[in-house]
Length: 137
Image 1: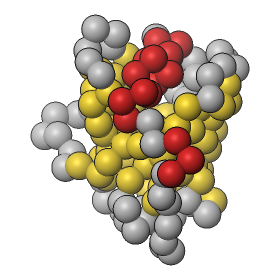
Image 2: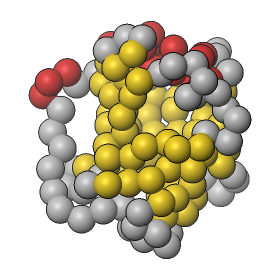
Image 3: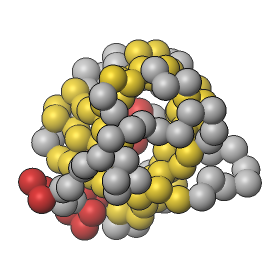
Image 4: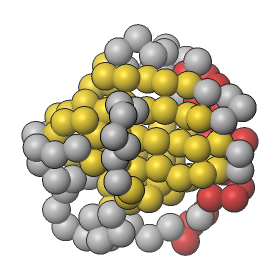
């Protein structure tokens, strides 16, 4: 399931890929103590990141891919330093076991997340801030 989730980023990145021109500026961090969602449509897939909780250093995120290839990863634990997020415990979703090398960065001025998959394919995908759905991601 996790393999499909990140494979979709690499397959669908052409439409939403911003290359080296991706802008990420600003001071500050994700809002503390409130849910925050990011997402976007990439070709025929829709990706959602739901930051369920964040205390300024650690948090919990739910990830979902909708479309022909679907995947869900709920309860992944992450830590943040200088707006770079590292998933320390993916709650058995398989992201770390598959050997993916990626970073997730929050951009305060743009209020967006940049997912930079380095391995197995080098792509960068921008996920825009959006309202969180009423139902759980």
